[in-house]
Structures are given as structure tokens and as C-alpha cells.
Image (tube, rainbow, N blue to C red; front, top):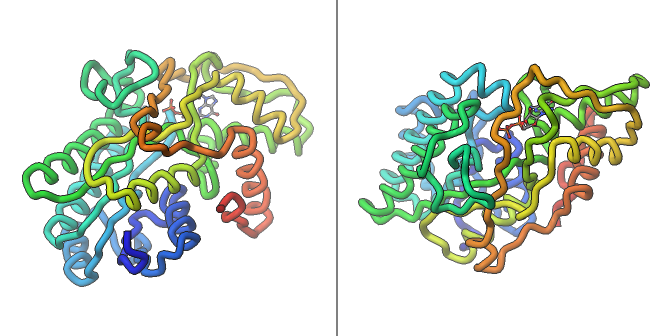
Length: 319
Ligand code: GDP
């Protein structure tokens, strides 16, 4: 991809979008276009159309989305399906109309069926029913990747969909009611250590298994796709390895230095039992994640502590 390409990062204040901007700048891309929500409401179709007509964008990285953890998804499915559907249709259609050359759409591993053979291959999409705690979000993301595919087939666009596994890193959401498990446990461990608590509460049974990818690895995979001229398709992005929620909590406690007991609150949902991605499609092209889990959690913890103190060394892991 040309270093002078005009690249619109939609959702640049979020965890994925901010990682993309860091990576693009580090790699020498200079024409990066961003808009805050106040400047451009991506749910406003007319505003999105005007933006694309005016800005002559070459490449779109569509990282804007309504995202959240298991409780937020289970309790606010209307917001998750509506906002994601409308952002995707607005941006993807406007990008096509404005002759955008390349677009990368970001989804999530929850698009795959609940009872999937593991590790999950891209071909398992739509082979059986979804996990009910996040089916509204998943349907919206499936619609997004199908939009990309349909536009490629009908209009010869070059729109690619990346499906990362559970992500973590700088600029994550640490609100305990709406966050994902890793930032939630990082915050809980930190606060338990600081307050000298004896226990830390983990939701569910601790037995579900999850795979975690540092968001800087997702940014690296995105640049890999763009720079290797991959112009269509669906690609899982993960590390190829998972662990139980109990093991994750133990790892986080080690990093943070909290030595109390784990307590499991089984009134909270477990969600899907396992979602380990098969990453051989990208591995076959010679792309691999490089940030180990404990190393990534340690860097994220430093960032969490620093941002609470008022500064953000968000580029800590940037090569
Ligand atoms: P999911 O991967 O879509 O299920 O989303 P989450 O990251 O929110 O949850 C993953 C797993 O971690 C589920 O089994 C949760 O019950 C479990 N979990 C344990 N403690 C927590 C917590 O404090 N917050 C969240 N969000 N999940 C937790």
C-alpha cells in the first residue's frame, strides 16, 4: 500500500482504532483521516455520504462499532444490533459509492456458532445456532462481512473482513458492567491489591476457555493484509492458543501482584464454552501474532496504571 494513501480510520478513539493509528504512524503512513463522534456521526447516513464525497478517501479501516462484554451484550441487544448494522451499511455503501480502493471491516470471533468444532475455521460460519448472550451483535457483524463479500462480487470492490479473537490492550473499556473479561479482571486485581482485599470475584464458573490477542497484533495483521494486497475474504486473527477464565485470572493476579483468593460468582453467565480460532489461513501466508499473553498483560497493566495517573504511554508495545 502506498505510504501516501489517504486512510480513514473509523473509530480511532477505541481500542482497535487507536492501535491502527499508532501502527500506521509508526510505519510511515501520514495521510490518516479521523473524525470524532461529534464531528461525524456514523449512524447518520447523509452525513457519512457527505464525508466520503468530500474527503477522497483511498482506504477505510472500519473499526467503529458498539462493543461490550457478556453482560452488556446480553442486556442491551437492541443497541448492539441496531448501531452496528447502521454503521456498517452507511460506511460500506458510502465507501463503494465514493470509489474507495480498499476497506477492512473488523468483526469478532462471536460470529461463529456456539457449538463449533475447535479450533474454529472460517468455513464454520453459519453452520449452526449462535451463542445467545451475544447473538444480536454477532448477526450485525455477520451482516457486515456479507456486505463486504456481496459488494466485492457485484461491484468489484476490494473489501476484506478480519475476525479477531477476544482483544485487549491500551484504551480498553474498564467499566465493570460493560467491559470484557480481561480488562475487568485487571481492574479488579489492581483494586483488590491496593485495598488489601482478601478475595477477587470472577463471574461464572471459571471453566469457559477464551483466546486473547493483543490489539497491536491485530493492527499488525491489518497492515499485513493491506501491504500484501489481499483484496477479499474473511480471515480469523488470533494466537492459536487459549486458556480457562480461571487460568486467565491467575495470570492477571501474578502480573498485578494480588495474592488473595478467587471467588466464582455462578449467578453470572459463562457464555460460550470455548472459542479458539483456527488461524491457519493467515499463518499460511506467514503472518503470526508475536505478543505473548503474560507480556501483553504486563504492558497493558502498565498502561492502565499510567492512564489512571493521568498519562498514557499507549505506544509502549509499538515496534
Ligand atoms: P465473551 O467472550 O463474549 O463471553 O465476553 P466476556 O469477555 O465478557 O466474558 C468471557 C468470560 O469471562 C465469560 O465466561 C464471563 O462470565 C467470564 N468473566 C469472569 N469474570 C468476568 C468479569 O469480571 N467481566 C466479564 N465481562 N466477564 C467475566
